Amino acid sequence: LDNGKWYDTPVSFDGLAKTFRSSPHHSSCIFVKRNLLVGSFLPHALLSRGEFAKLVLDYLIFGNAYLERIDSVGGKPMQLRHALSRYVRRGLKDGQYWWVNGFRNEEEFTRGKLWHIIEPDINQEIYGLPEYIGAIQSALLNEASTLFRRRYYLNGSHAGYILYISDPAQNTDDIDAIRGALKDAKGPGNFRNLFLYSPNGKKDGVQLIPISEVAAKDEFLGIKDATRDDVLAAHRVPPPLLGIVPKNAGGFGSIEQAATVFFRNEIEPLQARLRELNDWLGVEVVRFAPYAVGVGG
Image (tube, rainbow, N blue to C red):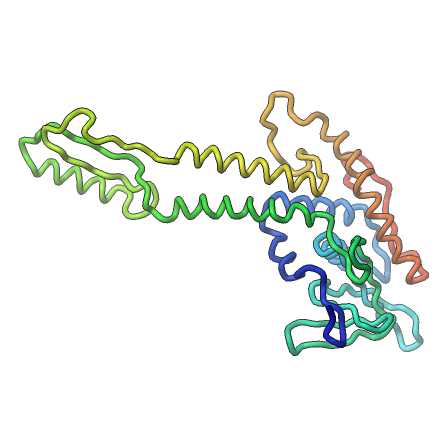
């Protein structure tokens, strides 16, 4: 779709920005790739390490990244400045791009001065789409399960325990004292303790039966593990690089071997894509140092 000036994005970029931190594994996978690329990048007079880091982060999150070429009076490039992918739109005319931040805030970039790298999509060629699209629902489910569990502890409607006394007390003041002590021990909120006094009550006269506590706990852990695996599969990041603690005695194996394979299979292809800037600019501004295990670049 277009509005007569620029094309709309195939998915909501605002939505992609909001889902970036929905799951700790989702954002951590992106940061790992960003850090490895920035750590191996060799800064250039036209492209600083800071601008390169912004470029990489946008490319990994949105599948699109932009650099604006700032020229001198004589027409020579002086600086490459990052433009936020969330607000850049491709115009209807060749080489035309717009900065769109809000309904009425729009400005056209100088024609031919904006470099655009995309992660190819099979349905259109105007914008790129990130690789992790298929795992967004898993990341959101991970977030939803965490929020549900957090609200469960915050609502204060569940009890820590029930103190049940069935023997009749000789002095009712003692019962009132116990009731007051329990009430003031934690106060209103999480794990509120309850006191029940039933003189001459039977042994099983009162029972605390959690309807779904055990099932909910198991379901919560299962959701967290399943959604985490989906996200890691989408990003193809080895678990040890994210600080995930193994649940088996054997662990994840050698972290150095995992890092080496990951760098060759995932980071080096990204480096090759980012070198396309050199062809567009005619200057070798994107260069990387050889990878060394344990050095990070």
